Length: 90
Picture (cartoon, rainbow, N blue to C red):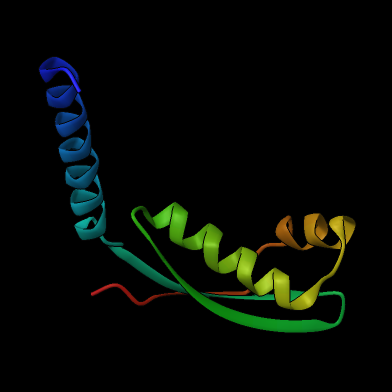
């Protein structure tokens, strides 16, 4: 293998490992619990995210996943406001 190609491969591997290392330490800052009522059911789920909106969306989607099946039910539930939101961040 020619030296310039070997150097390029080494740099690529080092860059990939650096990204993996950095991404693994970039943890979620926000942690919330969201409760949703939909179609006669009730579910509460927790989620974490790098932003408050990301955590809210994750918890809401997880709660809806427990209450619905199919695309129509999922969309309807996701458009239903949560009746309870608790910020669990410290």
